[in-house]
Length: 377
Ligand code: GLV
Ligand code: MN
Ligand code: MN
Image (cartoon, rainbow, N blue to C red; front, top):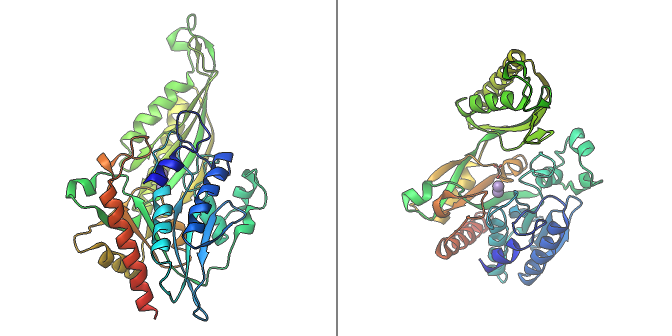
């Protein structure tokens, strides 16, 4: 917890926590976490995609690797626990098991980009590690050579991620921990409404082509589209109180556990945006699907192992939030542990977790690793 407080002070913005991919703040955070990984007996390296990887090697010949991880980047004005808590829990487990011989190598990973704040494309770190970056990613990203982070992953035996729940269910159920059944698919879209800027005092209402009014209509349709949908960014140009908005760029984040329902909602939103633009004399520019991730089921056997480790009462919950486990599941059996957070608050500086719940999570994760060790003796 104290370590989360320490990391929570490393930010690229004054007065609030924001740590985006490859920023100087991320470099500083990686240096601090590196020191804790070393203390836990891990050998540490940073790969070409700024993922921080602590590893201890098993003496077993032909040993595979069990990976514990989460992310060290944050959203803007973030809380202290979304991501870093999972990384530091991994470090705590490694420290606890320091003197226990394991039949697999143990890695703790701090991924560099789960939130996708800097480039709007999520999971840059874990996708780079698995060689899943697209050409478009590589064109967009200023940092060159991140594809060199690709590592062979046939040796991966399991990926386990602990994360705050980011929702209110555990609190309502009075339970500290849950296991995750599946991670919802998500689509991120960017679009622009172009209208005509003009004088806010002299242009009659009927003669306006106000781009923001068009965007506002779309936002209200998205609110009722029937899946989880959010317009989180909206930039108004020229952006003056006495000028009619001539251009609005916005982002849409659309999610659902059912991929077909999510895609249908996205198609309907695009159709609606075109209709709104036509009716209002606007142009819809640049409707772009920036990223699309399908819904991913967690591995049933690994989840069962985690559930036994978390205790009988631990419920199984779906995740509406994205996690690096959604990517790592392409390479090996992946499972996730959720930790109760106060009021379900997340992506907000008010994120809070209880010390006892964190202790329970370390115990559960340690038991899960030991149970895997037993299974692979
Ligand atoms: C990550 O936190 C996301 O789900 O957007
Ligand atoms: Mn997040
Ligand atoms: Mn997260």
